Length: 357
Image: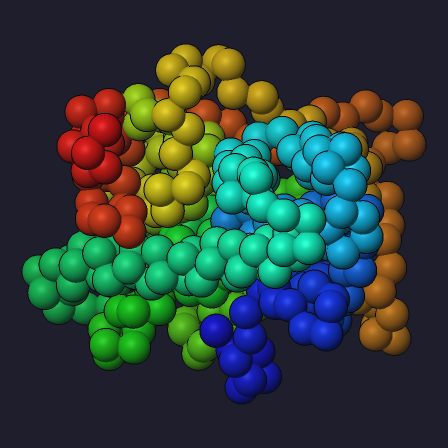
């Protein structure tokens, strides 16, 4: 998608370096950062310079490339793979991408490792772009149906950032929105600010602005009353891990939005590529839920009156805080899963039928 009118992907390889958009600097600064080593890739994932399940997967794939550039020793590549997998525990795309890369590199000659790894990493990213584009085409049908029924602006609520900044391009939850906008359907997006890192306010609103899509940032607890007022036609969110049962693990606060949507008969859709499906874990209680530094809650970063970026403490100094990054939305609250292959029921039967499992 575009920033300042120029088309970008979130990650690309150029001159032996992996380039990323440093998302910790948005929306106030647009900085392209170079990743030169495996440690750079691990740090980028841990510190959320890159974030979003598909983009984390793409970064991990290129992380293997960087590891091979440093040292083609198999023990070093294995250790690097473990560091990548352990960098963030919840998003399934991370381990999926690392396992796919290692499987592809099995039995490859040492002098061919780099070329094969680079081709596979590029393929993973190119596939994600196509998957997300197709998610958009499939989700567009839902938006068109709402518009044709009501013949007025379609109000969509989204949580966190499941936009192109969370993938390689297009996004998951935003892809249907972008496709609807391109088709001329009037769209307005309610953007949850998404505490504590404000990824909705800082990233989703930012990228929607760049595409000239009307949007309004709201406090995280506002969605319920908007649904009660009839001001939300549908919800679309992304996911960091969806079980084969249809249960959805996504940014903290998603579950509460799903409950509010259920209570007010508002359709609640989850958009995801198949790489985000965990076919192994059956009980959502076994999903590892990341707990991040409490400073993300107690401090907030912004621009002061002199355009300087500052971080300030907003809590009492002696207060404790807990920072769980994700929650689980049970399948029964999900209207449907929008995938690259089509829309299916959030259930074991629905997913198995969609993906011929």
